[in-house]
Image (cartoon, rainbow over all chains, first blue to last red; front, side, top):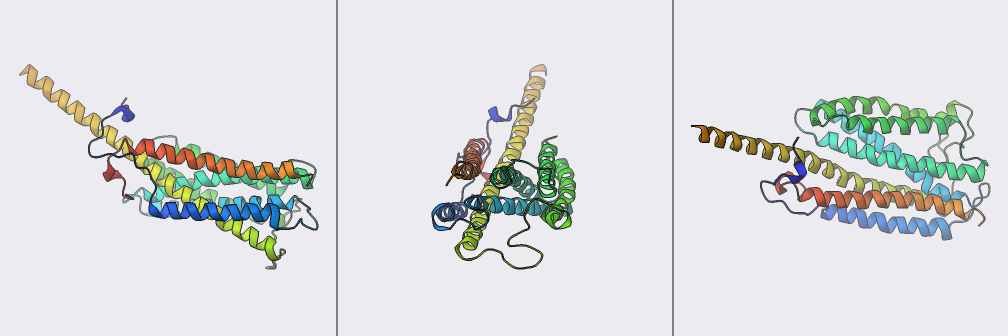
Length: 261
Length: 44
């Protein structure tokens, strides 16, 4: 078995990572906006008339849920492109994988923050309620998706297999979002993206929530850019290691035959 | 604010886990970048 990490690199290799000017700008904007959201969520916005102080969890809970949805939709779209153009590039597959990784993290945080909010509001960390159950199911589905991506290391086969799963898994998102409308649910209906179209938040609370969504979306973009480049580096390391191992084997075979002649 | 523990836990867990992923990503990227040629890094 080839130890790719120990194989000498042919060509110039620098330790400069995956950062570019664009990612630095996105990262700085994400940090600044997140700082504003934290200040506004804790000190500028008032307590909610119904939820009280626990509304401050909403400014992190809703953006994490939004980013998780966004991540899984991006995974599905790029998986579709990956299937359609699978013989040309693995770039779409890497974006799909990176997006799912970030989405799973944000979905986990949605479940955790929702659970903490539920303890304050409902008096319990968990209920087998339609919204909570479908969200947990969505989370487990994408954990499974990531597990499938790690079954084998052949990039083409990985791309094809995981793309099909991603295109099926994304169908769960409407079920999760509309679960509070379709079934009797303990979870409140959406305050912004609800079927009536009316926004049930006002002023600074709505602005803080919106800023949170933008801040977390920027964090998502930053993470996906870095992680899809990281996936490209990992694939390149395998290729580099294999190329070096084949070259070493050929040189060994040549020297053996030369000695025997 | 009686609920401060739960509210702080929500924020710290979220921002903390995102920070851990970000730092781990950058560190692994630097390590892998030294093992592959620059020609395999089209973003450079």
